[in-house]
Image (cartoon, rainbow, N blue to C red):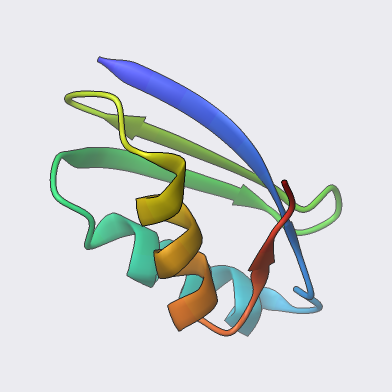
Length: 68
């Protein structure tokens, strides 16, 4: 198992959280996604380490930005 935490900008409501959660959950191997709206944190647990680029692409597909 691998758990990584990222920061996402641009989220303002529960719908934003749902959008990010939905897109990141679709990545292969992801077993859990936790998004905290207040802090902008995104915690992803997967069977194996995910590349940051894959997570960034999923977050951007949802319409938000992953902070470097």
